[in-house]
Length: 287
Image (cartoon, rainbow, N blue to C red; front, side):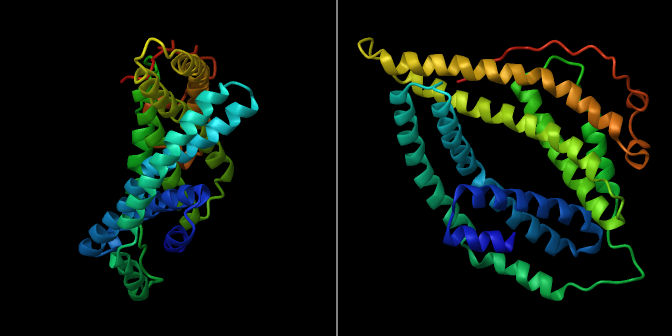
């Protein structure tokens, strides 16, 4: 995280923004995992700084994703050239403002606390510095998701957060205990990527909807019409992905190693692969 932070301060490209934000989430999960071995003051201070990075880069990351999505839509001839230029102009304006705000938040010298913490860090061969309680909590949060209810964007965003935290906790557990859980982690990652794609489509559709609504002059119809057509296309793509969520979620449950599955709710310990997919609720972005 510290290396990526330094890179961001020098060259804040889209890839660095993404990698730094992911690293800050992983640091927060690691701090939770080792909380019992870290003085409370240090735990709170370091967690707060990592959370500052996550929050500072959230909107900036969304803009980068939206710009990349426009380029993909251009290649597919799925977006009107005029609408593409308009959205690129608007998003680049937002990106500049968000970038400056992120720099101000992340440039602070307070991050030197991490260097000091690492210099004081000591290990022990006699004591287990971590607790698997965090893994248990993340597992229960993931397992308890109401997958049998109708899906909408709010629910899927909640599942996306649960899936991320579960994956990071499993990664830490795997690294500490050397369980070779790479295949299981890939299964979690497949679900996470699908949920991420749905979220990206939702965010971009929301921006399109807001922009289309701002064109209120009845004599100017080309841009708002093309934006509304693209909006409908994005919603269609998003809804198609809804149907993939439940099978991917069930695949995570089915492929869970015994040590992960053991404390799961009973209803998932003998899950069937023949379950019918849940009905899907189509939801347009809310203004």
